[in-house]
Image (cartoon, rainbow, N blue to C red):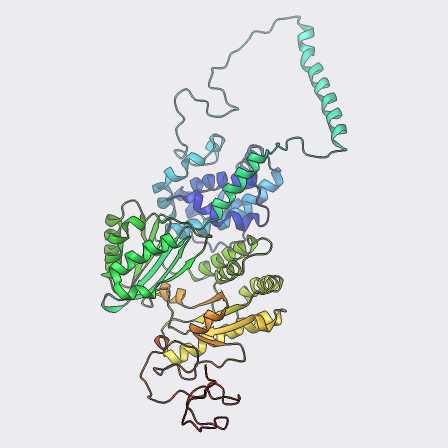
Length: 556
């Protein structure tokens, strides 16, 4: 598991914001390794393991290293090594520490954090600099090859003592003379820099270096491709989503899904975008992986990068599932999903969403805006459609961005779990989507740019048999609205009526029949809008000259 790579992708953008300085990125990368080594010590970790560490708790860094001299050494050495101001260095590590702590806890899952970090020592050990030997536990440093210098400032040669010669007055004066000369040079240099105050230590960046740095940043911004599936009863495919970088990978994954699940693979929805990687390490093993997950009812699986995370309602079944998948894909890291950390999930989502928005840049693609806004978790209270206070600052920022992107119309989609009736969930999901829409309008967004849609429990992304799965299914999604959206659900923008009876087997307006689950009432579809000048189907009303005996020729 690439712990440093994960922290660099998730924590660094949140710490740096719009300042994407390569020097600061490298500083944080080195700090993550030192920080992980520190957390690998049981005594250190246990001293705050029972604390509720807030993500903005910058005092947390002081509790990880209680020795002030060690804290000063870390910030000073990192500053010097990466040519960053010492004060800025201290601020960066203080901001990064609580965020990195939560990410490491999330990666560890049910495994104790120190054990997890010791088990994965090889993944970050080589990032720990030699000078950090005094601030990390013994045994965490990688062994230096024989005969190699430990650092550029430490000599391996034995100390030599030279006898001083008596009466060497001039030799005694030489160091003083040297200091005087150096002082004069420094003064002259300072005077010369006043007209052109570029820092003396600023490295010259060549065009080739600049291009390389840009390419490196672009590669780091690409998210790993992912596949998320859930099973239902009787070996059926309950939900399927994938995020892939191109259609070639999409075809590869879909072929494997079809081979395992047959026509049910049509439930898979794909987000194909160059924000995602064009390769999936587990793709070659999908033929072995998918039948295993299919054999377990009410289970879920997330494949992302080199990781597979699974869950099931039964602990014994889950343990066997992890074992079987690890045997089928030995190169992957297979773990059981840990208990739901509700507050952690909410906090993580807001940090990630804020980071995604910060990385949009100027004139962003509306699809990227929608994807960034969808990252946040809006954890509505049970049976309510009132936006939590914790989400409002991010929605305020979202409102500003939506207003700045021209010609962008967004659909706000509400989803629920399956813990109530379909009709109740459909209405609740619609009310929650409307609540988000009304809030954004109150912050200045043009009402005509926002359309809402309630999907209830009909479009799950996870199983509903576990607490974690139900949590993921309760969500608000943003997507770019276009004409094709009219064919995918119950849409309302104060001019298009929602499905009048979602429990029947037919479609009252634009909701596909496949989304209408339940017992058919065998009733004709009602008129979509009885107040308009045409009749949309065959229901008699005052605007239908045929009184329901014929379809309106203008009906679409």
